[in-house]
Image (cartoon, helix red, strand yellow):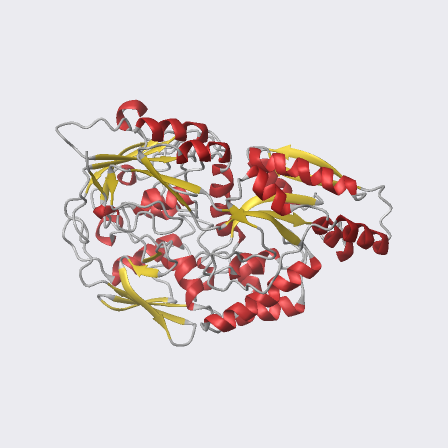
Length: 560
């Protein structure tokens, strides 16, 4: 499983990039997409202002969602794990299953996914599931979508399909393949996926079921395979499974939708929905004026300095999300090989003070990967407390002479953490550790992470509360990983998470890994963010939530 999980980085980073770029609080901070039709460049001639104005015509009910990151594509075959892309595309094409606000997997296209051996995963499609043209959604649709996601012609390197039988280690089937050995149609409503090695059901659900947005085979098979990344149909698909049709978009500014009255889960109560891409500093004004109706905690990054102002608005309700976005600090252990020095780096900083002063306490401090949002969080792991005297003792034991300067790379777009890094560097200096902070844009930060040419590097990273395995296995995966750290006890514990579904056992196994991380400090969490979301009181049936935000969007309604 180690070989497979090391290759998961591409998919993980896609989601990471969305969250980190969102932290820039800038509509211009993310990738703008390619120029080809179908990759997010096309518009229907409607201006940004009119497409996302929220001005109702003939009493139409319109809802505007404010987000702070740009899009890359609305083509499900080009899905890269980015959160805004997934939500925006999922309004048209539903995933098989999705997490809800309480971290339960709930049916979307599939009504059940089961396994008896952690190798064969049986997916049953909801009997009521239909396309907007009235055609039933079938197992053939799912299998055909998977085939195209594994196509070397489509070349989506983010989807990790190499875990399935019949797919090469590069993630692709042979060009021209008409089926995948590990994806077998059982009957009209049942399809089975078979992995090469054991995989936990939770991993299958979180990494595959949530990201396979089924496409209508009877439409897609009419296109040549080499047209699928540029096909104009994806700019305004007329056969969908979700609650809204795409009407217009500009990857840097907005996405506009109109209701699918034939949605098989029930016609939406609102007529139109717009995703408005704005700078984070504009969210407060938009919520105040009513031009933005709702923000979500990870797609809509309200600057912490605006939290109190948003809370004071009489026209909105504020909801703080679960603490899931981790401000992770990675240490290149090849450059800082003595664990005592790495421990000193942790003892020397006052993380609680940083949390209180820079995030107004909206978050938490933990050691390891799992926050209190995870069902496998081990409450007995007490975070290392601020103890500069202990830090100095460890440095003395390690023979640290203070002449070395550690290079600390930080995302220039994350103004909150740039401030935090300055505090941390001052606290490190106080115990005799010299640190040079280099702020770079996100793309450069990711390039630096890949090159391993750093001593310390910080970035916002979300470890899935229900399935942190993929990220933990990669980041603690030894040479080639961001930390360069590996430990046999950790490897054994993580492997064990893929063969059990018992919550207590999973808590124990993940706890083993987290305790070793606390002891050896290949990385640490500066803080975990509990971000702010807000919703206009005129909008009913909608609650900002970290997961499951659009699950029941058909029930959203507007009252004046």
